[in-house]
Amino acid sequence: MVTFGLTSLRISFLYKYQYMPFSALIVWGLTVRNYKSAFVAATILVAMTGCGGESAVSPPNSAGVGSPPGAVADTPTPSPTAVVVEPEAGGDYIVAASLEGAAPLKAAFDVENGLAPSWGTGAIPGLYDANEGAFRFTCGGDGDLAYDDPLLYPNQPGKSHLHHVWGNAKFDASLTSEALAASSATNCNDTSWSANRSSYWMPALINDRGEAIRPDLVSVYYKRKTSASPFCDPKSSTFIGKCIGLPNKIHFIFGWDPTQPTAKVEGASWYCTGGTGGHYTNLDDVFASGCKVGDDLIANTIAPNCWDGKYLDTPDHRSHMAYGSYGTWGYYKCPASHPYLIPQEENKATWKVTADMIAPNGTSRVRLSSDDMLPGAKPGETLHADYMEAWVGTVKDMWTENCIEKALNCSGGDLGNGKQLIGAAQPTYGWTNPSPRSLVSSISKAS
Image (spheres, rainbow, N blue to C red):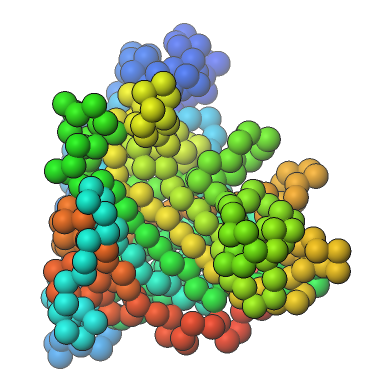
């Protein structure tokens, strides 16, 4: 079994802003992200005692194999008194216990059961870049289709637009980090001894016949500059940010933002292996570029990699993360408000283009389920993705210390140390999803 230790603090408002003398300060602080001011005001209003706990794990059955590792909840133990602040809507702030995030996921079973010699030989991969390392694996495209979003609409089944999910097989509106830890089934690490129990999702791709089309596969990447590189050295003229690992239990949404529907989209684009190969904001432009039947169509979502070091989640599920910019200094750099450079999570959902995806006039006959949220949107213009981290800590350390820090080119779940995640190199069905289509009308909105 695997669980997260409950070491992060949930912040919740105890009263509505308008009833409190310091309400204006709280609202102002949250609006401009001056959390210190908001917390000072909230501290004057109320202080409460939170709860914490240690990670709890249990081994597999007595034979050492067979039943998938699960999880049990810990008995909470008291933690130091903390201010508890709850925003009006949108979810809670989750405060990071440290720069590692929450307590790491721990496995009582031997994690070696979920590993194999890399590529059958224990070979070590070559370099990815002189100053950067990459860890990659392949997930199946056969994940769930659901009208749920546990980040944006927690405990509200059926409220979201339709999503396609990859990673952990556990997915519903009430999904939590603890539930992910308890579920070993995943199409990114297909073994009962899975170390990657994370969840990833994006809006579903739908054709004009009302069919949701799952991808053939989703390639997932984590990349970051090495700690020894000048990009991680505060004394360097090309310093990006303080380089740290992927925070335990971090959650975020990125790409198109419905609260700023016409703003320029960062971290989300479409491209095709045919035509010009350029990246585009919508599917009409992709097909106009020469993308044709038989080519691969890719939805590319690249998460922000600058973290504020304070929160594992925020009410908007975005403001604790940021992209760097080139500014006047001419190189990529994290903003001062988000000074920590973490491994950048990236997804490449891939479909084989079929004739019924392209209209006779060359425009797209497929769109995203979320396009309905933007009046006048071009097909695919609202591309975005969600992420909930749930890696077993010891295995995440392996790919961080080897693939990232040694600047290796790790693929297929290769951990860079002669070992490889089982079930992470190729979907169980091969490279072509045998059953990609489902009628949207047949998908229930009940969790």
